[in-house]
Image (tube, rainbow, N blue to C red; front, side, top):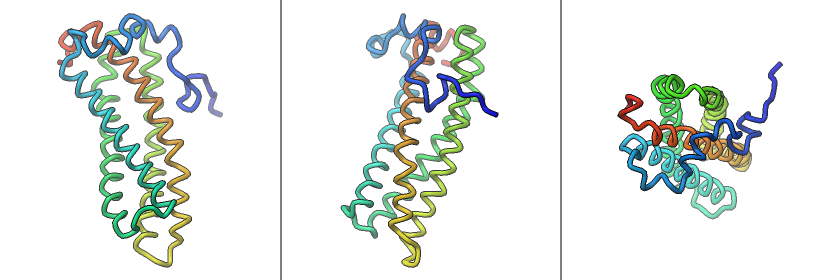
Length: 195
């Protein structure tokens, strides 16, 4: 039996006070001009922005297909590479975080260990959702190629998964940034041995 907590990805609305200790010292509005916002921080934030942008484009594209606002023939070559890239890059991004960065961050700041454990648990949830989205995307692509496959059902299947997935992803990305960026600003990339 799995015990549910307020920090589960589908329940939380941000970090509790004990995990906001560095964020309270380094709120988002101070990040852009901070002297410790180095190349890795910028890259991290850019990757997250790319995930958000791609997720939004895929959601809009799927909605346009469901509503009959896009040519079915044009949709497949647009959708397939973007969805594949999105899911592969997201999975790879999480592997790098879990194996390379989170251990360094946990060793550097014991007060945030629980937060990084929560983020690792998020990755497991998101990876399961990536597999579901991949299967639903494959089903949609099959329906686009094969007239015998119910396109409306395949479109609805993907459309039913995307909003929940995107909500979880946005919560995860925001919480990850709120834990990691203030830590790097506090200690510097060089000070953490990651710059």
